[in-house]
Image (cartoon, rainbow, N blue to C red):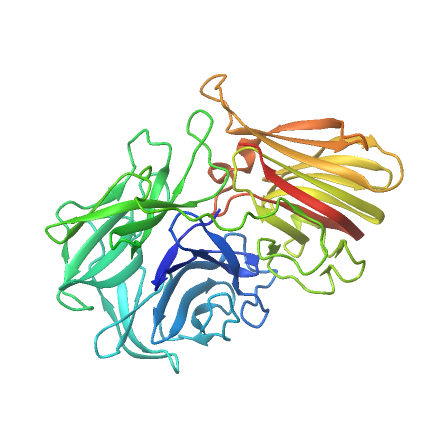
Length: 481
């Protein structure tokens, strides 16, 4: 669930950002030395003043399609917030780990998927989906010229978006996505003598697409180019991994992939996503599966729209995560929730929960209308399912007083029963002190997929408070692949 990747290289270091939509903090920032192993440094937008998402911001709105660039000794992050009072803004930092500046709005630059590029005389070009372009003054946010329409992909191509502009060799290249972010997604490119064109399309467009293929990665598009440590060229892009039968359901959201690029007659030729880079790989630190909440939350933890100390804290009860409920639980846009993106097709999450003064538990969330959860409170554990307009208590079982270990397990479907088989099974249970898990319910995972729920995000698994105050001593979230 790290979609819409944008990458830049500074010396031997690579930095990558992705969309975060309705989640806070926003725009995760990653670091790598080899383009394969990535470590999250933080989140660029980690203050409410930078990212004021209200309860009126729909799921799959908010922060989408950032571009990260390095120019004149500073990192520049340009992004559009699709929300009330949003728009396009630029943030800067000298260290990508933060802190990042307050936003400089670009009120005259309209659209989504903004890109930044600078020409030889320092003029800044902001290119946006559509495709159209502005000249901007980043110091003030003023539009100097534009909008000017540019080449927008193939004839009758749907959704020309995600533009990126580069000077490579003697040409300026305009890279875009087209076809929409579903199965027809593709990457196309054009080149010209100047950043504003005129542009001629590559005769081999699209240079990347998996539409109509049996490749396990589909929806490929929204790409960015970067040079590897050996000077070769590579492309980061988004794709999805559908599972189950027909039509195929993807549950992890859109993910980031890497592909090699070589050049023929000054045009890029994109290789397979399965190619391993030829240079030595340098794995970074391993992200712990378990969090005992002995300090501030790690950057992998995200909340829905905001996160205030009033409702979410590790200080009230040291060594515990404390959540104070707000709203009507997971159906409510103002739910108090702290989760991690599901990144593995099979995984398990567990938590020790104290619900003496409230109710809450572990949830698998896509949006307000699509979620499953196992909830403790009032002397029992319940499994809830919300699928569109339907909400039900699947099962309820009495439990002894005191803290309880709740368990969520996701098992990928590896053998299809028939063409209707779903992508996975999501099970919920309670764990006894000796480690024995009692499974309370097993639910079909297809109903928590993008193909059912719609939108642009995948699943997030985490803790929530439904009523009162709920304490979590620890949460672990580990892959089972």
